[in-house]
Length: 219
Image (cartoon, rainbow, N blue to C red; front, side, top):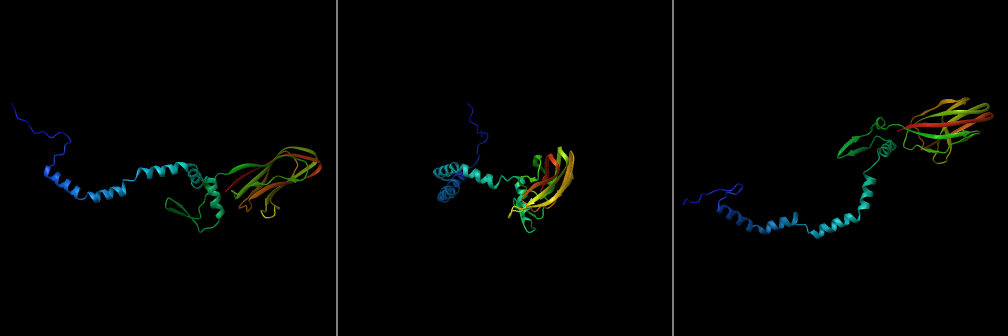
């Protein structure tokens, strides 16, 4: 009969038994230190983990609200906030990198269009106030779709509203309108008001104008 041959199975550790014994002895001699390290860095009680997860879950709504309020900032709101600071001695920090002011945000902030007033006017009056606190440039036009009466004349004014008193002050105007058409009221740059409106005066015999006053605004 043939003898047995020595074969090292694939993946087996071909290490001298004496070396293994020495390593095991070292491990045994340092078991206290090893246990201390493992306990401090790995062996976190499951009860503590469970409590932590439970607290997170029970406060999920509050956490989401805080994240949404403080992180998920609309770019338009951020642009308006940065614009309203109006000084050169501030910085923006993004992931540890700073951007020194001033920074031109206008190039990436597209204009917004809106209607200030639409209707038929037959006597002197004004529109409701419109909030433009996000913007610093406003351009407006008046579109006349129909005219009634005889010798009817319309004047339209774009006004800024003082916050403290509510008083209106003309910023731009178009006067002497007598027929159907589109008339530019004008553009106001670096507008210092949070609110604007339009007002109008009419003259002639039973004047009537159907108008839409539209605006474009940007930071």
